[in-house]
Picture 1 (spheres, rainbow, N blue to C red):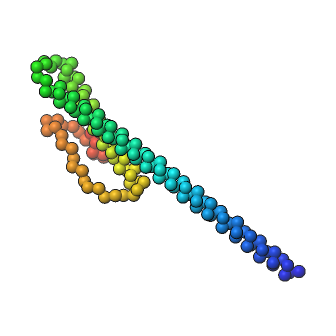
Picture 2 (picture 1 turned 30 degrees about the vertical axis):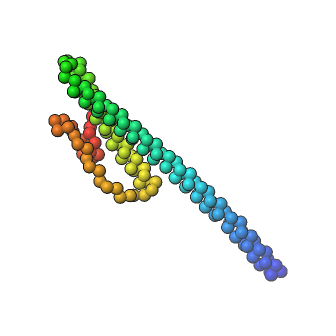
Picture 3 (picture 1 turned 60 degrees about the vertical axis):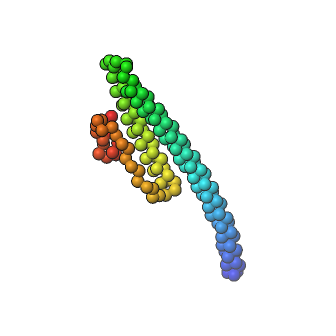
Length: 145
């Protein structure tokens, strides 16, 4: 009788191995599918950040050209309201530059997370108006407002 019980245990062990071998395959395929979908979402997000930063750059260029055209018009006398308006435009330009830099940094960080670290050539710092000084934050290097 002892022989029969060992045969039954051996059969049970083989059936358990068959059922567990299917489970990791399903889990692996689900994980792979989830990773693929996550990469698609990250790629879409990176593309949207690219478009957003490009649109902000265009907006910034538009504000810069409008500010230059205001400055070139000498036949209009500037009063206090005009100067106040130009100061607001200058502040807005600085804020837009800060936003564009922040979005670019965020986009680069997202790319590093999705695709891993890449080596990119160092960008030259933007030229600033020599007569215009602003303070920067020591932590991020971005202007404070």
